[in-house]
Amino acid sequence: MKKFDYYQPESLKEAYGLMEKLNGEARFIAGGTDVIVRIKQGALHPDALISLRRISALKGLGNEDGLSMGSMTLFRDIERDPAIARDYPALGEAASVLANPQVRNVATIGGNLCNAAPSADAAPPLMVLEATLTIEGPGGQREVSIEDFFRGPGETCLEHTEVVTRITIPKKRKGTGMAFLKIGRVAQDIAIANAAALIVVENGVCRKCRLSAGAVAPVPLRLKRIEGIVEGRKIEPDLLDRVAEMVQEDVSPITDVRSTAQYRKTVSGILVKRAIKEALDRAG
Amino acid sequence: MKRLITLTINGKEYEVAVPPNLTLLDLLRYELGLTGTKKGCDVGDCGACTVIMDGKPVNSCLVLAVQADGRDILTIEGVETEEGLHPIQQAFVEKGAVQCGFCTPGMILSAKSLLERNPRPTEEEIRTALSGNLCRCTGYQKIVEAVKDASEKLS
Image 1 (spheres, rainbow over the protein chains, first blue to last red):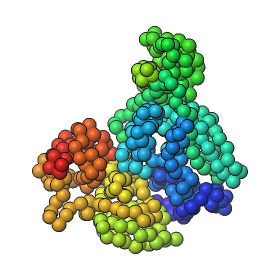
Image 2: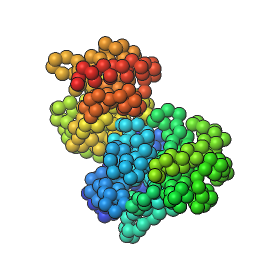
Image 3: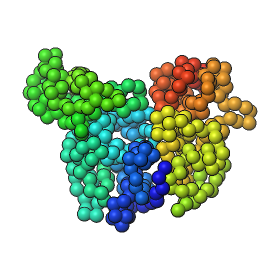
Image 4: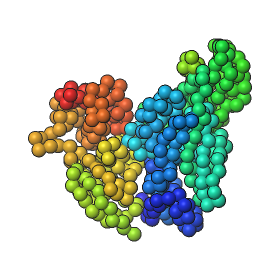
């Protein structure tokens, strides 16, 4: 592996101060399960790594008024949190199928988002849950909707010196159901396609619909056009078939070692449809 | 520049100077001679390098040695007790779960971590716990049977 220096700041200020001093030649490292692989593969060549592990402000999981997660929260902790399993099952499900147990013991939710893979399993559930990311850097603090966070494969709206500090999710409304689904070649593989749905039902009619699909475009997608079709209607088989067709129109997948573009298209429509059905079953 | 780190490996405390780009895996194998931990893919897919860090299985190829500073590490060398093989190791031998043996240390450590947390796992729970460990001899069935057998003997 290429040589690099290693810093372990104890505070955020110290962390982005170091990043400024190192003139952008350093990388922040959270769990490291992506960064270390990319350094080994020669895709990243940092002069230094700045570890975020000792910064206590980035830790902690609370759910008093909605859910608030420090960006350094481990997938293992999200997967095992009983309140997340009860109130935000789409997020718990995504956390429990991300990579493998060894990776989940080290990988963090903030790291997964900042790595900005179009297939990031944490993204679709956070999209349908309308998560807000708190970002901090030398210029101060700002909040960004998860929808505006991703810019392209591996690219986010973060400045080089900025760190995602927290991820917050609004409180769950009554009558809400949600689900996350993923298709991969084997259990631990990166998604061929993934999807999440969130539905609010009142008197049998869908009052709110949030849909997201991953690994089928340069960024994780919110499917707003389709949400608009579902809202205000009764969710019936004809409508779901139409949704699956519309998903195929709205995605723009690539062909790679895991799947052809055509398969991704077809399967993402089916995943969204199934996720809506599952969300509906849970909305009761 | 090398960093001085202190870590506990198999109950013994070590103080070592490591460069920041050294992985925990390479520290164990090439600096400390603990070659029971295997180097397979080196990118976190195969699980041959699994060790237990602070009670949880991790891929040692994805942990920098500097990140292991202050941590407690268990490798396959620390699993055997004075009375002999650990019951999980014994079950692997008896059930024919070891073929070429390359994945075995990682499999045993993932299984050990599962059984400590969940002494009577279902078959599905066993398969999930071992989903990050690849066996290219494809002897999964016997490995799962060995973990089941060990869980019965241990509980």
